[in-house]
Image (cartoon, rainbow over all chains, first blue to last red; front, side):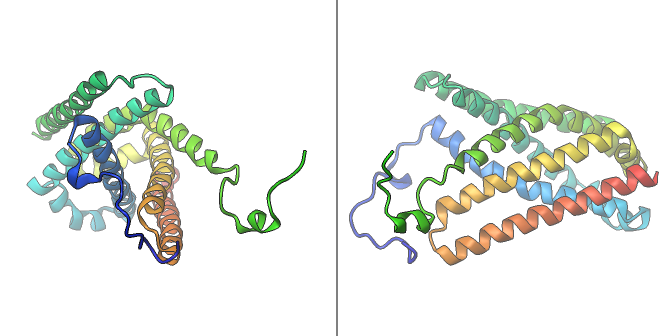
Length: 132
Length: 127
C-alpha cells in the first residue's frame, strides 16, 4: 500500500477510453477550478499584504494590476469563480438527493459553463466601463 | 454487545474512525457561507478596483468591506484546505509524500490566512 500501485490486473475504464459527456467535464472542471481558486485566494491574501504595506509598496504593483494582463486575470478568475459557485450550488442540490436525472444534469452542466463565461464577460465589461 | 474487532485493527487507525463526516459537513457549511458572502465581496471589489490604492484602502477599512473580506478569506481558505486535502488523498498514494503535502497544505492555508487577516485588521483598526 505504501509503495504505490503495482497490481498488474486491468483497472476499470479510465479517462483515455471513457466517452466524454457534460457531467464528466463539469466534474473535472469543478476540481480543477477549486485548485485554481485556492491559489487565487493565496494571491488575494498576498495582495492585501501589499495594500497594507502602504502606497509606496503598492505603487510597484499597480502597473501590473491595471495592465491588460491584470484585466485578463480578472476575466479568467471571475469566470472560474462563478463556475465553481454555480456548480457548487448544484453539488449541494445533489447532496439533498435531487437533480440526478442524466439528461437534465447534462443540460445543466452545459448551462453552468455558458453562464460562467457570460458572467466573466459581463463583469469585465462593467469593470472596463467604470475604469474610464 | 460483543466486540468482534481484534486489538490490532483497533490500534491501526485504518477504516472508519467516525470522524470523516466532520470534513464533509464543514466543507459544505463553508461553501454556503462563501456563496452568501460572494455578492458582497464582488460588489465591494468592483467598486473599489477603479479607485487605485485609495479606492481599495477605503474598501478594506470600511466595516462592510473588512467584514466581507474577513469572512471570504476565512471561509475560503478553510474550504480550500479541505478541498486540496481531498485531492492529495485521492491522487498521492505514497504515505510519506502524502503526509508532507497534507501538513504543508495546512501550514500554507493558515499562514496566508493570518497574513490576510493582519492586513485587513491593520486597515480596519488603524484607519
